[in-house]
Image (cartoon, rainbow, N blue to C red; front, side):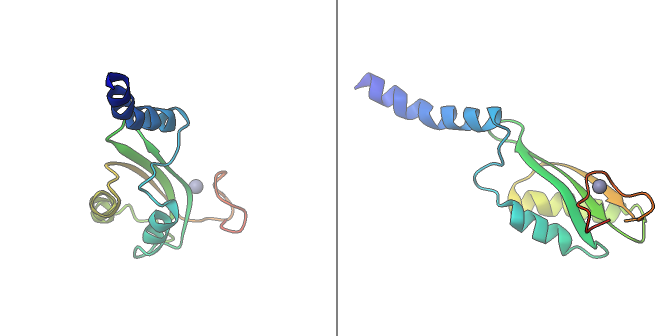
Length: 115
Ligand SMILES: [Zn+2]
């Protein structure tokens, strides 16, 4: 009986730990929805190199490259992205790289059709 209770209690922790070890996208986050949200932002033409992973069992991080042809560093947009990723998807730690999408200096992480 005690073994069963301990087993049930540790199963979710074991599963989350395994997910962490495998660098998996947290189960409650759908990368396609996050990508669609980012692509819908004003001035953003394309999204690539999107990574989402759990930093711990309670904290989620994201890195992404956004093609923003006007090339203006927009702190207000970054604040909006940070706030909305937290509110909509529960992602607390974000790192966003803006790129102009200049074809003479293509990003190595971008798919060929984007650059
Ligand atoms: Zn890039």
